Image 1 (tube, rainbow, N blue to C red):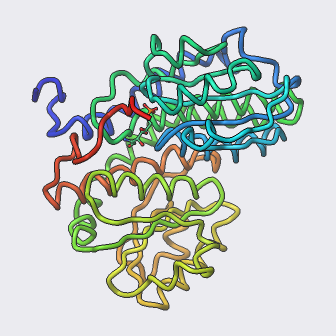
Image 2: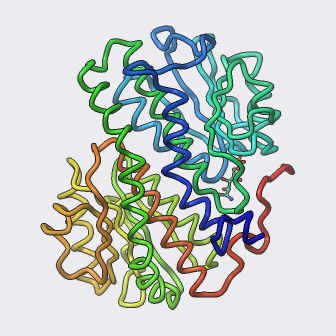
Length: 364
Ligand code: AGP
Protein backbone atom coordinates (compact mmCIF):
# COMPACT_ATOMS: atom_id res chain seq x y z
CA UNK A 1 0.00 0.00 0.00
CA UNK A 2 3.02 2.23 0.28
CA UNK A 3 2.92 2.18 -3.54
CA UNK A 4 -0.79 3.04 -3.62
CA UNK A 5 0.07 5.93 -1.33
CA UNK A 6 2.68 7.15 -3.80
CA UNK A 7 5.47 7.04 -1.21
CA UNK A 8 3.40 8.95 1.36
CA UNK A 9 2.63 7.61 4.83
CA UNK A 10 -1.09 8.16 4.44
CA UNK A 11 -3.63 8.58 1.68
CA UNK A 12 -4.48 11.95 3.19
CA UNK A 13 -0.87 13.14 2.76
CA UNK A 14 -0.85 11.89 -0.82
CA UNK A 15 -4.15 13.59 -1.57
CA UNK A 16 -3.02 16.89 -0.05
CA UNK A 17 0.15 16.74 -2.14
CA UNK A 18 -1.76 15.93 -5.34
CA UNK A 19 -3.72 19.18 -5.29
CA UNK A 20 -1.52 21.17 -7.69
CA UNK A 21 -1.78 18.35 -10.24
CA UNK A 22 -5.50 17.67 -9.98
CA UNK A 23 -6.33 21.38 -10.00
CA UNK A 24 -4.33 21.86 -13.13
CA UNK A 25 -6.09 18.86 -14.72
CA UNK A 26 -9.44 20.39 -13.87
CA UNK A 27 -8.32 23.74 -15.25
CA UNK A 28 -7.27 22.22 -18.57
CA UNK A 29 -10.61 20.42 -18.73
CA UNK A 30 -12.71 23.54 -18.12
CA UNK A 31 -10.70 26.32 -19.79
CA UNK A 32 -9.96 26.89 -23.42
CA UNK A 33 -8.11 30.17 -23.67
CA UNK A 34 -10.25 32.75 -21.94
CA UNK A 35 -13.47 30.78 -22.33
CA UNK A 36 -14.97 28.67 -19.57
CA UNK A 37 -16.08 25.46 -21.24
CA UNK A 38 -19.20 24.09 -19.58
CA UNK A 39 -21.72 21.59 -20.96
CA UNK A 40 -24.59 23.16 -22.94
CA UNK A 41 -27.04 21.90 -20.34
CA UNK A 42 -25.71 24.42 -17.79
CA UNK A 43 -28.47 27.04 -17.77
CA UNK A 44 -27.99 30.62 -18.90
CA UNK A 45 -27.68 32.38 -15.54
CA UNK A 46 -29.54 35.40 -16.96
CA UNK A 47 -32.68 33.23 -16.63
CA UNK A 48 -32.00 32.16 -13.03
CA UNK A 49 -33.39 34.28 -10.22
CA UNK A 50 -32.37 32.20 -7.23
CA UNK A 51 -29.84 29.49 -6.41
CA UNK A 52 -30.02 26.97 -3.59
CA UNK A 53 -26.90 24.99 -2.78
CA UNK A 54 -27.16 21.79 -0.78
CA UNK A 55 -24.51 19.37 0.54
CA UNK A 56 -23.05 17.80 3.70
CA UNK A 57 -19.82 18.32 5.61
CA UNK A 58 -16.88 19.61 3.63
CA UNK A 59 -18.92 19.78 0.41
CA UNK A 60 -21.36 22.05 2.28
CA UNK A 61 -18.46 24.32 3.22
CA UNK A 62 -17.43 24.53 -0.44
CA UNK A 63 -21.01 25.72 -1.13
CA UNK A 64 -20.82 28.25 1.72
CA UNK A 65 -17.67 29.72 0.11
CA UNK A 66 -19.27 29.81 -3.35
CA UNK A 67 -22.19 31.84 -1.99
CA UNK A 68 -19.78 34.77 -1.47
CA UNK A 69 -18.51 34.44 -5.04
CA UNK A 70 -21.84 33.99 -6.83
CA UNK A 71 -23.59 36.81 -4.98
CA UNK A 72 -20.70 39.22 -5.57
CA UNK A 73 -20.01 38.35 -9.19
CA UNK A 74 -23.52 37.61 -10.46
CA UNK A 75 -25.87 39.31 -7.99
CA UNK A 76 -28.05 36.18 -7.77
CA UNK A 77 -29.37 35.44 -4.25
CA UNK A 78 -27.85 32.18 -3.00
CA UNK A 79 -29.16 30.09 -0.16
CA UNK A 80 -26.94 27.37 1.27
CA UNK A 81 -28.23 24.51 3.39
CA UNK A 82 -27.07 21.21 4.78
CA UNK A 83 -28.86 18.34 3.08
CA UNK A 84 -30.32 16.77 6.23
CA UNK A 85 -32.09 20.05 7.03
CA UNK A 86 -33.04 21.09 3.50
CA UNK A 87 -34.90 17.88 2.77
CA UNK A 88 -37.19 18.26 5.76
CA UNK A 89 -38.21 21.85 5.19
CA UNK A 90 -40.46 23.36 2.57
CA UNK A 91 -38.03 25.57 0.67
CA UNK A 92 -39.90 27.85 -1.75
CA UNK A 93 -38.66 26.78 -5.20
CA UNK A 94 -39.77 28.52 -8.40
CA UNK A 95 -39.27 27.54 -12.04
CA UNK A 96 -36.24 29.83 -12.24
CA UNK A 97 -34.53 28.33 -9.22
CA UNK A 98 -31.31 26.45 -9.85
CA UNK A 99 -30.53 23.82 -7.23
CA UNK A 100 -26.86 22.88 -6.95
CA UNK A 101 -25.86 19.68 -5.14
CA UNK A 102 -22.21 19.12 -4.29
CA UNK A 103 -20.84 15.72 -3.31
CA UNK A 104 -17.49 14.01 -3.62
CA UNK A 105 -18.93 10.48 -3.62
CA UNK A 106 -22.22 11.34 -5.29
CA UNK A 107 -23.80 8.76 -2.97
CA UNK A 108 -24.39 10.66 0.29
CA UNK A 109 -27.89 9.59 1.34
CA UNK A 110 -29.04 12.95 2.69
CA UNK A 111 -27.78 14.86 -0.35
CA UNK A 112 -29.44 12.40 -2.73
CA UNK A 113 -32.70 12.59 -0.78
CA UNK A 114 -32.54 16.41 -0.86
CA UNK A 115 -32.04 16.29 -4.62
CA UNK A 116 -35.08 14.03 -5.05
CA UNK A 117 -37.04 16.37 -2.78
CA UNK A 118 -36.81 19.18 -5.38
CA UNK A 119 -36.15 17.28 -8.61
CA UNK A 120 -39.64 17.96 -10.00
CA UNK A 121 -39.55 21.64 -9.14
CA UNK A 122 -36.09 23.04 -9.81
CA UNK A 123 -33.34 22.69 -12.39
CA UNK A 124 -30.73 20.39 -10.91
CA UNK A 125 -26.99 20.85 -11.37
CA UNK A 126 -24.52 18.71 -9.46
CA UNK A 127 -20.81 18.99 -8.80
CA UNK A 128 -19.40 15.53 -8.14
CA UNK A 129 -16.15 13.61 -8.10
CA UNK A 130 -17.60 10.22 -9.02
CA UNK A 131 -19.04 10.85 -12.47
CA UNK A 132 -21.18 7.68 -12.60
CA UNK A 133 -22.69 8.22 -9.12
CA UNK A 134 -26.40 8.38 -8.24
CA UNK A 135 -26.33 12.14 -7.69
CA UNK A 136 -24.69 12.70 -11.09
CA UNK A 137 -27.18 10.40 -12.83
CA UNK A 138 -30.23 12.07 -11.31
CA UNK A 139 -29.15 15.62 -12.17
CA UNK A 140 -30.05 17.65 -15.26
CA UNK A 141 -26.35 18.35 -15.61
CA UNK A 142 -23.37 17.06 -13.63
CA UNK A 143 -19.98 18.75 -13.56
CA UNK A 144 -17.05 16.49 -12.63
CA UNK A 145 -14.41 17.93 -10.32
CA UNK A 146 -11.74 15.55 -11.69
CA UNK A 147 -9.95 15.12 -8.36
CA UNK A 148 -9.30 11.40 -8.91
CA UNK A 149 -10.07 8.76 -6.29
CA UNK A 150 -10.13 10.19 -2.76
CA UNK A 151 -9.49 7.47 -0.18
CA UNK A 152 -8.77 9.38 3.06
CA UNK A 153 -11.94 9.90 5.09
CA UNK A 154 -11.00 13.55 5.54
CA UNK A 155 -11.79 15.28 2.28
CA UNK A 156 -8.91 17.39 0.94
CA UNK A 157 -8.34 17.49 -2.81
CA UNK A 158 -12.07 17.07 -3.47
CA UNK A 159 -12.68 20.29 -1.46
CA UNK A 160 -10.25 22.42 -3.48
CA UNK A 161 -11.49 20.93 -6.77
CA UNK A 162 -15.10 21.62 -5.71
CA UNK A 163 -14.11 25.21 -4.98
CA UNK A 164 -12.47 25.51 -8.38
CA UNK A 165 -15.54 24.26 -10.29
CA UNK A 166 -17.86 26.46 -8.21
CA UNK A 167 -15.66 29.49 -8.87
CA UNK A 168 -15.83 28.80 -12.62
CA UNK A 169 -19.63 28.63 -12.30
CA UNK A 170 -19.63 31.96 -10.45
CA UNK A 171 -17.50 33.52 -13.19
CA UNK A 172 -19.85 32.14 -15.85
CA UNK A 173 -22.88 33.43 -13.92
CA UNK A 174 -21.32 36.90 -13.61
CA UNK A 175 -20.59 36.91 -17.34
CA UNK A 176 -24.09 35.70 -18.30
CA UNK A 177 -25.61 38.51 -16.26
CA UNK A 178 -23.27 41.14 -17.69
CA UNK A 179 -22.02 42.04 -14.21
CA UNK A 180 -18.49 40.75 -14.45
CA UNK A 181 -16.05 42.99 -16.29
CA UNK A 182 -14.14 41.07 -18.99
CA UNK A 183 -10.87 42.34 -17.42
CA UNK A 184 -11.85 40.87 -14.04
CA UNK A 185 -12.62 37.56 -15.73
CA UNK A 186 -9.28 37.58 -17.57
CA UNK A 187 -7.36 38.47 -14.38
CA UNK A 188 -9.05 35.73 -12.39
CA UNK A 189 -8.39 33.13 -15.09
CA UNK A 190 -4.77 34.28 -15.21
CA UNK A 191 -4.59 33.89 -11.42
CA UNK A 192 -6.08 30.41 -11.72
CA UNK A 193 -3.38 29.38 -14.17
CA UNK A 194 -0.72 30.27 -11.60
CA UNK A 195 -2.63 28.63 -8.73
CA UNK A 196 -1.10 25.13 -9.05
CA UNK A 197 2.37 26.69 -8.73
CA UNK A 198 1.28 28.75 -5.71
CA UNK A 199 -0.17 25.63 -4.18
CA UNK A 200 3.17 23.89 -4.54
CA UNK A 201 4.69 26.79 -2.60
CA UNK A 202 1.99 26.47 0.06
CA UNK A 203 2.86 22.77 0.41
CA UNK A 204 6.41 23.80 1.31
CA UNK A 205 5.11 25.06 4.67
CA UNK A 206 4.48 21.44 5.72
CA UNK A 207 7.59 21.07 7.95
CA UNK A 208 6.94 24.38 9.64
CA UNK A 209 3.30 23.43 10.22
CA UNK A 210 4.42 20.07 11.66
CA UNK A 211 6.35 22.01 14.35
CA UNK A 212 3.36 24.20 15.20
CA UNK A 213 1.17 21.08 15.27
CA UNK A 214 3.19 19.58 18.11
CA UNK A 215 1.95 22.47 20.27
CA UNK A 216 -1.60 22.25 18.94
CA UNK A 217 -1.68 18.55 19.83
CA UNK A 218 -1.55 19.50 23.53
CA UNK A 219 -4.69 21.66 23.36
CA UNK A 220 -8.20 20.58 24.36
CA UNK A 221 -9.91 23.28 22.34
CA UNK A 222 -8.85 25.18 19.23
CA UNK A 223 -10.63 28.06 17.50
CA UNK A 224 -10.45 29.00 13.82
CA UNK A 225 -11.30 32.52 12.68
CA UNK A 226 -11.97 33.98 9.24
CA UNK A 227 -13.99 36.80 7.72
CA UNK A 228 -15.95 37.00 4.46
CA UNK A 229 -14.99 34.23 2.05
CA UNK A 230 -12.46 32.97 4.64
CA UNK A 231 -15.18 32.27 7.20
CA UNK A 232 -16.29 28.96 5.62
CA UNK A 233 -12.62 28.00 5.47
CA UNK A 234 -12.35 28.59 9.23
CA UNK A 235 -15.25 26.13 9.61
CA UNK A 236 -13.50 23.67 7.30
CA UNK A 237 -10.23 23.95 9.25
CA UNK A 238 -12.11 23.15 12.46
CA UNK A 239 -14.03 20.24 10.87
CA UNK A 240 -10.82 18.72 9.49
CA UNK A 241 -9.04 19.00 12.83
CA UNK A 242 -11.95 17.47 14.79
CA UNK A 243 -12.32 14.59 12.37
CA UNK A 244 -8.78 13.29 12.49
CA UNK A 245 -7.17 14.61 15.70
CA UNK A 246 -10.29 14.37 17.94
CA UNK A 247 -9.46 17.79 19.40
CA UNK A 248 -12.50 19.95 19.93
CA UNK A 249 -12.38 22.79 17.43
CA UNK A 250 -14.82 25.48 16.31
CA UNK A 251 -14.75 27.93 13.46
CA UNK A 252 -16.17 31.43 13.91
CA UNK A 253 -16.61 34.49 11.78
CA UNK A 254 -13.96 36.81 13.27
CA UNK A 255 -16.49 39.57 13.92
CA UNK A 256 -18.75 37.23 15.87
CA UNK A 257 -16.11 36.42 18.46
CA UNK A 258 -16.96 39.23 20.81
CA UNK A 259 -20.60 38.15 20.84
CA UNK A 260 -19.78 35.11 22.92
CA UNK A 261 -16.97 32.76 21.97
CA UNK A 262 -14.21 35.09 23.17
CA UNK A 263 -15.20 33.97 26.67
CA UNK A 264 -13.46 30.68 25.84
CA UNK A 265 -10.11 32.30 25.15
CA UNK A 266 -7.20 31.93 27.56
CA UNK A 267 -3.54 30.85 27.33
CA UNK A 268 -4.51 27.24 26.72
CA UNK A 269 -6.63 27.92 23.62
CA UNK A 270 -4.79 28.20 20.31
CA UNK A 271 -6.58 30.42 17.78
CA UNK A 272 -5.87 29.91 14.09
CA UNK A 273 -6.51 33.05 12.05
CA UNK A 274 -6.97 32.73 8.27
CA UNK A 275 -6.24 36.24 7.00
CA UNK A 276 -4.92 37.03 3.53
CA UNK A 277 -4.09 40.72 3.07
CA UNK A 278 -7.47 41.57 1.50
CA UNK A 279 -10.07 44.31 1.98
CA UNK A 280 -11.13 42.80 5.34
CA UNK A 281 -7.61 42.29 6.68
CA UNK A 282 -7.60 45.20 9.15
CA UNK A 283 -10.90 44.09 10.64
CA UNK A 284 -9.68 40.52 11.10
CA UNK A 285 -6.44 41.77 12.65
CA UNK A 286 -8.32 43.84 15.17
CA UNK A 287 -10.31 40.73 16.18
CA UNK A 288 -7.03 38.85 16.42
CA UNK A 289 -5.62 41.53 18.73
CA UNK A 290 -8.63 41.15 21.00
CA UNK A 291 -7.72 37.47 21.28
CA UNK A 292 -4.04 38.26 21.96
CA UNK A 293 -4.99 40.70 24.69
CA UNK A 294 -6.69 37.78 26.47
CA UNK A 295 -3.64 35.54 26.22
CA UNK A 296 -4.83 33.51 23.21
CA UNK A 297 -2.01 31.81 21.29
CA UNK A 298 -2.29 32.86 17.66
CA UNK A 299 -1.36 30.88 14.58
CA UNK A 300 -1.52 33.53 11.88
CA UNK A 301 -1.96 32.29 8.32
CA UNK A 302 -1.39 35.19 5.94
CA UNK A 303 0.82 36.42 3.09
CA UNK A 304 4.11 38.35 3.38
CA UNK A 305 2.43 41.79 3.57
CA UNK A 306 0.05 40.54 6.24
CA UNK A 307 2.91 38.96 8.19
CA UNK A 308 4.97 42.17 8.08
CA UNK A 309 2.03 44.33 9.15
CA UNK A 310 0.54 42.21 11.91
CA UNK A 311 2.64 39.11 12.62
CA UNK A 312 4.19 40.40 15.86
CA UNK A 313 3.04 38.60 18.95
CA UNK A 314 1.71 35.52 17.18
CA UNK A 315 2.81 32.09 18.42
CA UNK A 316 3.48 31.20 14.77
CA UNK A 317 3.11 32.82 11.37
CA UNK A 318 2.46 30.59 8.36
CA UNK A 319 3.20 32.52 5.20
CA UNK A 320 1.26 31.88 2.00
CA UNK A 321 2.27 33.16 -1.44
CA UNK A 322 0.30 36.04 -2.98
CA UNK A 323 -2.74 35.21 -5.10
CA UNK A 324 -5.67 37.32 -6.33
CA UNK A 325 -8.02 37.77 -3.34
CA UNK A 326 -10.77 35.56 -4.74
CA UNK A 327 -8.43 32.55 -4.84
CA UNK A 328 -7.38 32.71 -1.19
CA UNK A 329 -9.93 30.14 0.09
CA UNK A 330 -8.54 27.56 -2.36
CA UNK A 331 -4.90 28.26 -1.52
CA UNK A 332 -5.40 28.60 2.26
CA UNK A 333 -7.17 25.23 2.32
CA UNK A 334 -3.67 23.72 2.12
CA UNK A 335 -2.42 25.01 5.50
CA UNK A 336 -5.82 24.18 7.04
CA UNK A 337 -5.41 20.57 5.88
CA UNK A 338 -1.76 20.38 6.92
CA UNK A 339 -2.55 21.72 10.40
CA UNK A 340 -5.12 18.97 10.88
CA UNK A 341 -2.87 16.30 9.38
CA UNK A 342 0.22 17.09 11.43
CA UNK A 343 -1.76 17.54 14.65
CA UNK A 344 -3.29 14.09 14.13
CA UNK A 345 0.19 12.65 13.46
CA UNK A 346 1.47 14.27 16.67
CA UNK A 347 -1.44 12.68 18.56
CA UNK A 348 -0.96 9.31 16.89
CA UNK A 349 -4.53 8.94 15.67
CA UNK A 350 -5.57 6.96 12.58
CA UNK A 351 -5.49 9.69 9.96
CA UNK A 352 -7.01 7.82 7.03
CA UNK A 353 -9.66 5.92 9.02
CA UNK A 354 -10.70 8.11 11.96
CA UNK A 355 -12.95 6.48 14.54
CA UNK A 356 -16.74 6.55 14.04
CA UNK A 357 -16.53 7.94 10.51
CA UNK A 358 -17.23 6.49 7.07
CA UNK A 359 -15.90 7.90 3.80
CA UNK A 360 -19.32 8.02 2.29
CA UNK A 361 -22.39 8.34 4.50
CA UNK A 362 -25.01 6.26 2.72
CA UNK A 363 -27.45 6.07 5.62
CA UNK A 364 -29.75 8.95 6.55
C1 AGP B 1 -15.05 15.66 5.19
O1 AGP B 1 -13.74 15.62 5.61
C2 AGP B 1 -15.94 14.60 5.61
N1 AGP B 1 -15.43 13.33 5.88
C3 AGP B 1 -17.42 14.72 5.30
O2 AGP B 1 -17.85 15.88 5.92
C4 AGP B 1 -17.87 14.74 3.82
O3 AGP B 1 -17.41 15.90 3.21
C5 AGP B 1 -19.39 14.61 3.76
O4 AGP B 1 -19.78 13.38 4.33
C6 AGP B 1 -19.93 14.73 2.36
O5 AGP B 1 -19.54 13.66 1.55
P1 AGP B 1 -19.75 13.73 -0.01
O6 AGP B 1 -18.97 14.88 -0.52
O7 AGP B 1 -19.25 12.41 -0.54
O8 AGP B 1 -21.23 13.92 -0.27
